[in-house]
Length: 340
Image 1 (spheres, rainbow, N blue to C red):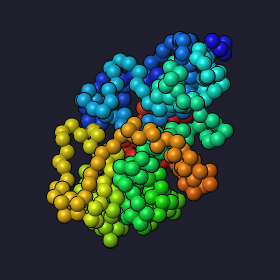
Image 2 (cartoon, one colour):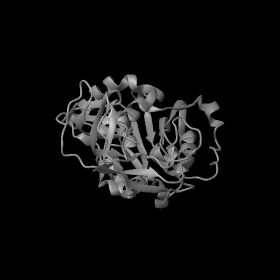
Image 3 (cartoon, helix red, strand yellow):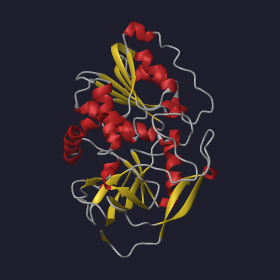
Image 4 (cartoon, rainbow, N blue to C red):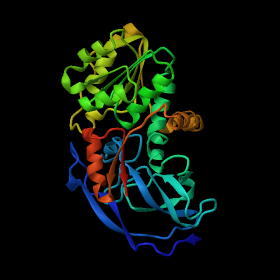
């Protein structure tokens, strides 16, 4: 085993103290001190440099059955993270290497080498492996191109368009030849960013009026693809503007994550009969076979400057929780990252 001698005895990590009801509260979580362990056989010890907070984590705080196991009460939570290996007991990963893994919400993590992916900090900033070149980027790529079966000439509507996934969906659609790209966001500042920085043809602030009316104005000829990050009134509006053979890819429904009662479904589902429309949900984990193609194509766009990305960076593990709350409120522009 190779290791560096100057390691702290303890590090800080976030535990789920109780399952939130409705909007999460600070009392539902606890920042605790934990022992820094040496890695066992086939493991590495990682000092996390950046950790991710994402909307899907709200679902894991509930005990309800879902596509992934809930966080355990009284134990450290999980999430994407990237950091430097400071001790190694595994072949192929050395001290000083940087790895991407899934044991975030903590300063130090003992990671099975099989669950760690080496990344190159010289090829791209480390934080991008959690966003534009990471899981959120692949989510945008797979959801648009595979689930929504995007084709050149499609008119595309993206909700939550200033977020990490949505902003990338719109840009990929534009780079792939969309006839029109429309986005919704929660502030006038974000709307301006979508049009002026990310190249959307039109965007609107959903707080400024009914989504259906604003979408009709932004997409007068209807839409062929809707990439759904929000659900609720956005989904209903999209169904109302769907063209013949339109496709809807359901990535997330952040508008209902904190509801304590089931939200009513869209009232116009019957319109799918008329349009022969399709709604399909997806999980990024089903599309990891696209990873090499994704990194090659999107990495090229990032390096050339054709695809732009935003990051909202919060400093310090002690602020991890506030960063997560910020994601649920929609405070972030682009990917929300916590720098440790």
